[in-house]
Image 1 (cartoon, rainbow, N blue to C red):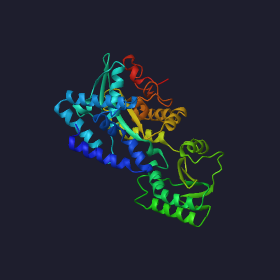
Image 2: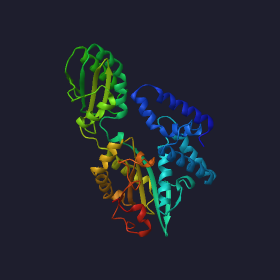
Image 3: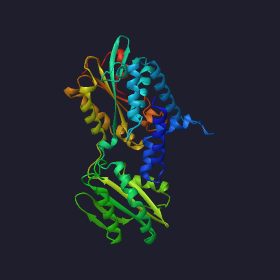
Image 4: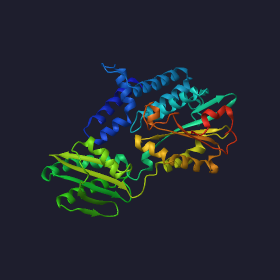
Length: 385
């Protein structure tokens, strides 16, 4: 569906991006794992078995291929355009796979599912029907980066820039150190390179170390260098990281550099707490009018991208997603919405993880909607327990 030449070009591009020995390349590997898994499975298993997550990726890919065969010519064209957009620039296949999984999940609950977005160019993606009742489903992806004061992408680029110099400095100053960075104004992916913030931070850290100063600060960043005092700290980054996470909390961005027996830790935070759930609410408010017709009950199926296990678990345990979803549902603009659902990569890939949702998604019903108590829609709209 992507085209053989376009697929080969994209895979080569992703492999090159993921092969560099950097933190940013590891992030690229994670973001584009679907494409790379599909290519590996296309090339044979090479003696290694298929993991549960890889099997789930293969199932969704196969379903997309079967869907292409069932669609009309116009529907098939729209599907292939979505795939081509997903294989360009910084995009990925997550939106398509979220759509395929949402359709599969609703079928497993006894709904008939049609891909109205492809077949009829409807603003919503899926039309589900059960016992005479219909509902529109709009699938959307929102990145957790939109709610972070310090973006992971910007942080990884900063660490990759400074890491070689930290190794050199550690060899000349063996010991254990921690550099704490606070960004009162944030550190956003969209801005650092354009306005010179990352190069400026790089220069500040380098100068601070060369002058052996312990502190430096302005309105953009506050830096403090201290001895690393964690008990029994190990040079092994994998052993040290859990201790650092416990010490600095789930919202901190951490990086460990080792050289010559020395350890240099960088720990960064924004000037305020992350607001990932708030970003999800803002996204729903931005899309609801354009994605649902209002002639049928509507479901917003939100995929929260770029979260790790601990972050996803905390969003649920702290009831942050629930609070923001229910706040959204009280607004007049949410009148067409009978329910909001939220899911992540853990559920998409079917990972048996303590942080995954057993039912496959969080659901928050809009009790004010006339269809909220319709038995036929209950499996798709009733709030999660």
